[in-house]
Amino acid sequence: HFITLDRLRRTADGIAVSLERSLMPAVGDLENLPHIGLIDNSLTITLAAYGYVGADGDQWIGAEPLSDEDAELLGRPSGTVFLKASRTTYDRRERFMEHVESLLDPLHFRLHLQFGASK
Image 1: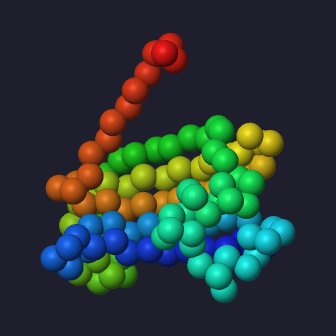
Image 2 (image 1 turned 90 degrees about the vertical axis):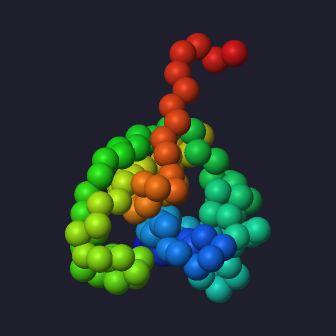
């Protein structure tokens, strides 16, 4: 069993800039998430409150044209190119924690990677 959470984010002036679709395990008290909602409107904070803290995973980021359905949700012409990020995260106990697919307006988002030995 899983919980899905779809979120459309907008700028202060109402322009849709991202569409995020998350999939989480519906286990323990997390099963009640659809009824009680997110803590501080944050999925990361909410998952941590239920004992899920990300430790490992992978993420792919590319660009692709919006489908007709996604374009309608985002208020953009079909085929508009958005960044697409797909991330799967496992917690410190190696449990599946979350799979997220995000469509991001490239004019409002950028990627930052930090690498090398931890300081």
